[in-house]
Amino acid sequence: MKFIKSVPNPSGAYPAAKSMPFPGCLPLTDSQAETLVAYNGFVTITREPDPEIEGSGTTAAAAWLGRNKKTIFLNLKKPSAVEAVKRLILEYDILVEQFRPGVMAKLGLDYETLRGVNPRLIYCSLTGYGQTGPLSPRAGHDINYMSRSGVMASAGRKATGPVLTNMQVADVAVGSMNSVVGILAAVHHRDVTGRGQYIDVAMLDGMDLVGLSWFDAGVRSFYTREKVTGLDDLQGLTIRVQESDMMSDMITALGAKPAQVVYSKVYAALHNAEIDGAENNWPSYEVMGHYEVAPFFLKDEHTRVPEVQLASPAVMEKLAALDESFPEVIRACARESAQKERELWARREADAEQNMRKLGICVTELDEAEKARFRAAVQPMYDEFSAQQELIDRIQKS
Image (cartoon, rainbow, N blue to C red; front, side, top):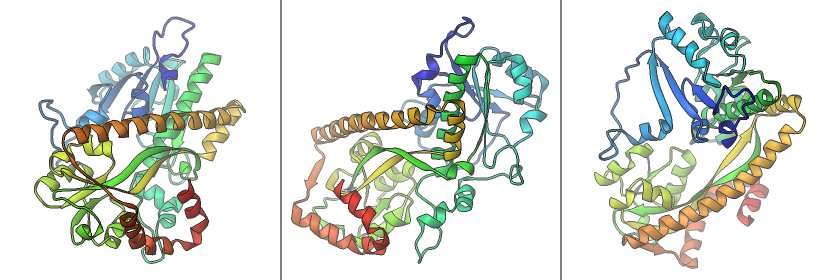
């Protein structure tokens, strides 16, 4: 993502590449691109507030999603606000918007209008169903795209039918990443031609995905309010798991009771004894402060959850049309970044474990006999997926 910041500037008019997403895009902000988030008016949402980070005046969610961003509130129905955006467009390079098709045109902020202000502008529209076609006017959410694409059906079993996955695939994996890939390609195009481009990203289109590489998201173990030394001690305990039926089934198979608690509420649930324990990797255990309310760590390493880098074949075809070398460049970058991420993650994981041990956290490690008992307890879950035994064998041997 340093590519965005280091965009060549033949004319001297753009000292540093800047991105101006309306809803925001973390991969761009994390690249150190200067980012301005423009909100359309004021929105009031009534819900239970997230806990604040002590002494900061902000919540963990706001700090995470708002990092490296400047914020401006504009009522885009007012001509003065539209003119303010046009003035900003003169110095910003990238605009990302997520309104339904036609809304930006009604506001006078569509691509054709804004490229008249700044011909170098890269303009990305991210919607559920794209700018054209019978579904384009419809609103949608991650669950809609996953159900229409068949992802929910493939994630379920015969007994459950279609189920939600434990992450927002269309929003996070498809929408964000395809937008970033398209924007980077457009930046390269602008370096060569001096002209910006319009990028139309439909989250549903991207649900037909191919894998590029995988990142390590850590090995997960149990941690509890009271000491647990093995499988027998887990019996009857209430353990927080990710919002995933498979994870719940695993906890049940081990003799405990699963509780699907929202991640930001886990600390409070442990503190208030609403749950007896949870499970996660060492860095998450440290960063979220769960060790303060669950100081007993059972290093059973029951699950490793990779984070897969995905790409849409349609996007890869568009990249190939710009330059036939682009798809292989993306694949090579994915492989290289995955190796680097795993190195960094291994280091971070080791540091977190060391920090926790120094604080006096009680760590219990399992011997091979006890690990065998854990594996035997969950074997029926593997049996349910016997049709995919070849894939299971490959994973276990890797």
